[in-house]
Image (cartoon, rainbow, N blue to C red; front, side):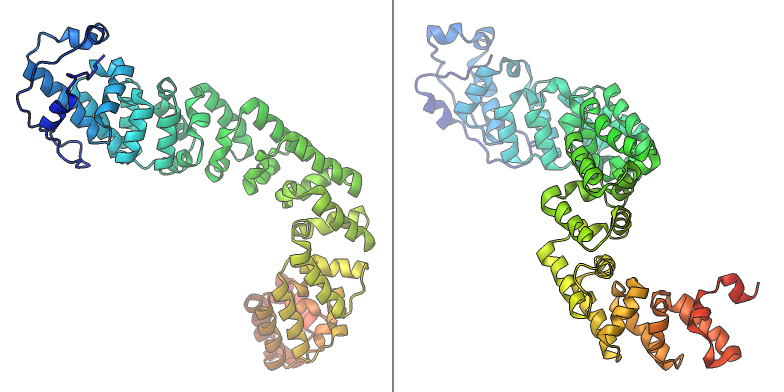
Length: 482
């Protein structure tokens, strides 16, 4: 090992060596201005512990001075001082077997991947084997040439700082497996930047990674990995298999639907089997739903597993029960308005309930629950504007409630779209606004494709007296006379 023990007057050597400032380009040659030096004075203990010096003690003084000074200069350029260099070589004998050019090349490769001076200093002093292990070179070449150096700096830091070199063997082959299994080449860097490289690749054999991908294949497979690369971090037997099996059993073995759940909400896999089963059991016992119904709710709203059972689920479902809904009604409500379970009570639900009660809905009634189902699908501001729009056209609160009882969706439509249709009804179709009381579903049809198109086709033959109900509800075949 290379011990940089010099004469007791160590400063005499240091003062005679002129170090060039760090240029951030390690490919620059390291020129040192050396002055004649006195012969090194080593104690007997130092000599016995310094086989590197003993091995080369026959060299000329000038040659040895130049070699030692070159090592010092090389490491000084990444911020490693004289004493740290001495400690580094003392504790890592393998460094002494490498030529200076080899060390310089390794540092250059690391620098080309984005490791700046500070990071190189930290890396070399914390994990000096990064300069000596043979496994590093193929990885550096792969990261630089094949992946175009696009792995994020934070990922590289974790990879080199926290991973023993023996676990870096085969890294290129594991990345190639992802590509062979269907990850597009242009997406592979995205995947690598979003996973825990140690868990997902380094600590696993190629066949283990292949088994994970094969297991996920029936459940949106590669699409799931691309949307949520972190699924590759999970252990196959203890995490992925049992968590997916919960959904498979609820669905009755419908792999396609399970894949839709996972693709819609990949974070579902973050939750333990126990956590998911507690939510399922709550819906079974408190709402009296069957497995197929529970799965359909999860399919429409996978994030239900994120909602607290006692703080959110129980009081909201109790409200629906208080409004007179039975388990079948609650199921239909949650299928159409699942966000009711997650919206803030005081920041969202209360404001909508107040608006609905103000226009005439009675509290804890079935009609209120149905209105709330539609109101859940819009925001408070739009609901307020919709009510204000109806009032501005001369309709009363009683009229709004009456229309909403027939067609609850009017409460969730965009207010600007409603105004466009109501204006056309009055100005172009020359109808009274009261016709909406009879046929409020008029407001749910597409303006250009249905309302305007059909009216312009028929107005020349049928005149202004045609029923807007018949105009819009007949099928395309009957309308065109086919």
